[in-house]
Length: 368
Image (tube, rainbow, N blue to C red; front, side, top):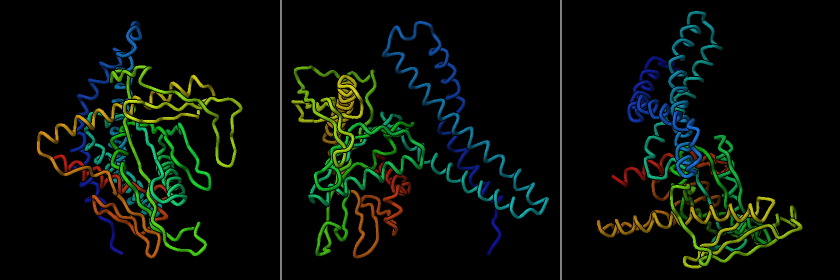
């Protein structure tokens, strides 16, 4: 086995990280952080809640970016020192540890490189992810639940905060739909490339004759609305229904009608929330989800108008975006980027970083 060329690897990573630091403009970010900290400490900040929300949100995001980049730079600069100590003492274990650290730093730099491609208006925000079963009956409901687990495992692997707002369980197995919020910088920009129809081909566990079935589930990703977005909803435009929260198999059933379902009459958009204990809290959360979906609808309409003016007839890339085949062979393939892997079990356990990275790069190249 050939010896690793550590110096060459470190040099290449230094070049990539330096380019990222230049794109992000760290000195400017630090200036912005100082100004935002000054603004956030003003005694009258919360006299204007909308402005306060914008200041504190922006400050949090800037600080996260600075901390992340600075931490990666520090780790990369420390690797040559670790290698020098290991080599001077001929310590094979220490050399392996230094190599492992270099691998981890390299992955962090590549992840950061992908994040620099996220420059959309809402990319920095938290994300609301909704999964719905589509064609396929009980198969589709089971598939929707498998997708829910895949994304929750992905978030768990990356230590993203997740709040499940609502889950509607199907009668036989699986779920009809679920909505959850992912809270981390650039959650929307990262997860928005997962939007579209996901197709599963497998031997059905619900078919007594063990036949192969195809089922579909839809994934919708929208940015979380902020106070500065000005999405006004007239009470006359909505219908509010309350009902009793429930879990699978009758578990977790509340004794009061605290769950809330809101229907926006003009668009037909329906949102629900049942994770809070009180009807008031569930209503507030459901209204926030509705505002986010209306914001995304407005953004898509504006983009459609711009595409029409530009003569863009490419259509949406969201539909039929990925196939998961479990039988007669094993493969997961993204139909937009052609990125594929031969280990569906790992993908369904949340290892979707390669698909997300390829999707972000594909979207960026499509915009140019």
